[in-house]
Length: 450
Image 1 (tube, rainbow, N blue to C red):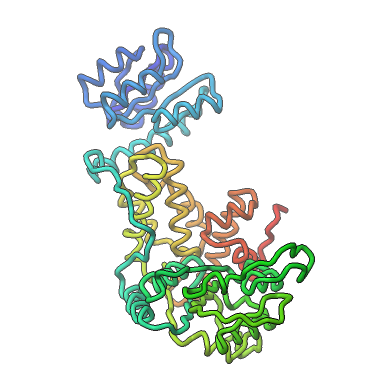
Image 2 (image 1 turned 180 degrees about the vertical axis):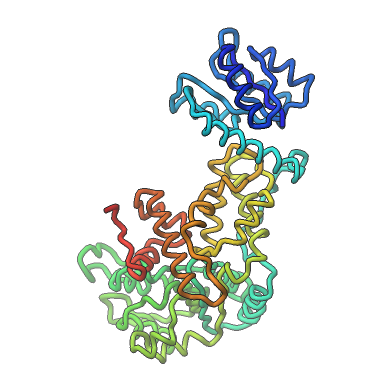
C-alpha cells in the first residue's frame, strides 16, 4: 500500500521513508499541503501521514481539503505540540488518528497497520458507495434462529389471552422487550405498559411503588401516592426480577393475582385493579421454591404461560443481524457514516460468549461507534475481544465451569478497564448494578480497587 508522508522537515521525511519502506510500504513524500494535494490528484494514495504544523501550511487544512475532495483517503496526523485540544480537533475534523512527536516507531507502525486494515475493510465491503443508515423503527426483538423463533411463537399465543406470563432468561437477553411485545400486540395495547425492576428496590420502597401509600404512612410520605398497579389499571405491569421479591411481598402479590385488589401502604381500603401481570427473572424459580425462598402458589399463579429466552451464546447466528441494527442506530445518533463491520471483526463477535448477552453486544457496538475514527468497525475497535481471549479458557459445549470462569474473567477485565466504576462496568457488561453485585458475590470479586 502506498503512503504519502507530509512534513516540512527533510530529516523526518527521510527517516519515515526509510522505516516504512523497510516494512514493505511504498512511500511518497511532500513538504507542504499544496505538494501533498498535487500528488493525491495524480497518484492513487489511500493513506496520508502528515505533520500538523508546517512552515507554509498545516495538516488540519490539508485534512479539511481531503475531506472535501477525497473523503476516501485516510489520514493520520503527527505533531510535536501534543495536547488534548489538538487531539480533539484532529479527531473531530475527521482524522483517522493522532500521534505526538517524538513517537515510538513501533507504535507508529501499529497505528499505520490499523489504518491499512481499515482501508482494506472499506474496499472489501464497498462501503464508500453505500447509502447512509436509515432512520430505524422502535426497538423490537431481532433474530431468526430456531430458538428465538420459538420465543416468537409463544409470545404470539400470549397476546391472545389475559393470562399471567413468566419470562425466564439471563440478564441482558431482552426480557422487557418480550413483555412489551406481548402488551403492544394484545387487547390491552391502548392502556399503559408499566415496568419495575423488583431487584433494584428495597422491600419497603418496592411495596410503596407497587401499591402506593397514604400521606404520613411512613417517614417522608408527605402526600398520597398512586402505586404502579393503579397506574397500569387496564394495561400491563411488568415485574422484572420477580425472583428477588421478599417473602412478605410475595404474599401481597399473590393476593392481587387472586382477588384483583391492592391495599396502599397506610390504608385499610382495598382498591380494585384490572392489571395483567408479566413477570421475569434470571433466577431458577423452581429451585427457590424447593428451598422455601419463593412461594409455590405464587410461582404457579405466575407461570400460566412460560417463555424461555435463550442466551446470545445459544443463538450466535443472530449476532450479525443484531450488530448491524445496533451499528445503524448508534452511527445515526453519533452523526457518523459507519457503514459496516469487517468480516474479521464479525467472526470475533460471533466467537465471543457474551456473558451480558444482547445488552452487552449493544453497548460494545455503541462504544466502538463512539470511539472509532473510521467508517468500518474492525477488530481493533473491539479491544475487549483480544484483551480477554488469551486470559479466558476455551469453553466446550456443556462445560458450565468454563463458561462461568470466562464470565468471571470478563467482569474482572471490565472493572479494571473502568477503574472499578460500577456504573460504567454495568453499562459495558450490559447488566444493571444489582446484577453486577450478585455476580461479584457469586464469583468472589471485589468491587473495590484494592
